[in-house]
Structures are given as C-alpha cells and as structure tokens.
Image (tube, rainbow, N blue to C red; front, side, top):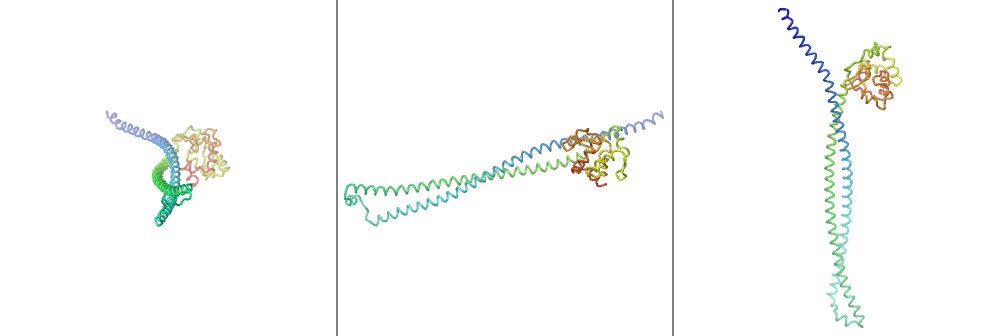
Length: 335
C-alpha cells in the first residue's frame, strides 16, 4: 500500500508534464499555421484593395476629363456672352441713332409747314408726278416705321439671347462644381485605400519574414551535404563553401556574407522547408524560384547547387534586402 501510494504523486507529475509538453508542441505548430492563415487573408485583402485603387484611378481619370470638358464649355459660353454684349451695344447704338434721325425729321416737319395731299396735288405738273410724290411720301413713312420696328426686334432678340447665355453659364458653373466635388471625394477615397494598402503590405512583409524561419528538416543526408563547414572567416574547405565561393566570386558577391546568409536561412540543409512553404538552402518559394529571372528554375527547388548559383545571381541583381529582409543585413555586415 505504501509503495502504491508513493507512486501516485509521481504519476500525476508525469501526466501534468506530458500535458504541458503537448500544449507547447501544439502552440509551436499552431503559431506558424495561424500566421500563414493571416498572411493569406492579408494578401487576399491587399489584392482586393489594389483592384479598388485601379477602379478609383480610372474613375478619377474620367472625372478629370469631364471637368476639363465642362471648363471648356464654360469658357465658350463666356466668349459668347462677350460677343453678345457687343451685339447689344451695337443694336442699342443703332436704335438710338435711328430714333434721333426720325426725331430730327419730325422736328423739321413741325418747323416747316406740313406737306399735305393738297400741296402735292397743287405742286404737281402732271398726274404721273403726283403719283410719284405720293409714293415717295408713303415709302419714307414706311421706311421709318420698319427701321424702328427692325431695330426694336433686334434689341429684343439680343436681350433674349443674353438671358439664355447667362442661364447656360450658370448651368456650366454648377456642373463644374459638381465635378470638382466628386473629384475631391474620389481623391480622398483613393488616398485612404492607398494608405490601407501600404499598411497591409508592411504587415505581409513582416509575416513573410517570420514564416521564413525553418521549422522542418529533412533526411540526415541533407545535413551531411553541408559537412562540418566552419564560419567563413575560417576559410572552410568542405560542405557548400567551395561552391559558394565560386558562385559568389563569379558574380562579384562577398562569399563570406553569402555563406552566413545560407546558414541563417537553413543551417546549410537543402531539404529545409519553412512554415510558409519556403524551400532549400536560401528558402525560396515556388513562385520566386520559377520566375523568369532564374536561369536555374528548371532544376528542383531543393537542389543546393542550383540555389547557390541562383542566389549569387539574385544578390548581384540587388534583391538581397528585399528577399531576405531579416538575414541579409547581418549576413553581409558580419554581425
């Protein structure tokens, strides 16, 4: 009984320890999965926002074009108003001149004895001359009346046209203001979307950098490929060092920095797979490895020699700080 009782606390401790270890393992495995899931959501949202920005850019371009058209229309209306103003001034001047002429004629007739029908008959030497004088008097009178009527009609038409042009100008100004207000709203929405997208891209870069850490190792043969290579300062003669030295030198890259970069990314193990599905010595994802920049993309992504040659080329192209944001700086600064 004593022996059995003494084992009970020990068994409880072992069970508790096993539960704790299980929880730690679960959390360790779950964390990268959660990060990968958030990364996927953020990328999807960034893609949607990028599409929204493209649509807003297109809409803004249309508004700018519409605003320019409305501005041109307003300018044309203003020019027509200026021309119409000149026509009104000319018509008023001609009307005043005609009125003055008719008035002078009326004054002259008043001062002199009016010519009556009897005067025309008495002063005519023949019936034909009488008819001619009567027709002349009638035509003069009709001409004066028609001239005044025409000028007054012209003045009315010009005034009506002026009112229409003023209405057109007000409508053009209103249209321009609406376009300007809408353009301001679209620009504000575009700025907000771009700001959101910038924040998402920063978060995506952070998550990608976090997921680049190797969490799964492959067979022991992969580790053997790296040999017992010493740090670059010790000029290692085995493992990946000779190939790194050759590839780096051919591309004008510091082989020591490239070696440190490899060790930081994978520990020299070509079979390492990161939580974000990054593979090999330098942790490439398939989309990057298979892109047109890589002349070795036909080779398996886990091929250590191919990754070394490709990475030397990528570093020469200046991609180091962007593709390995957390390890490039320390590797090539020697820290």
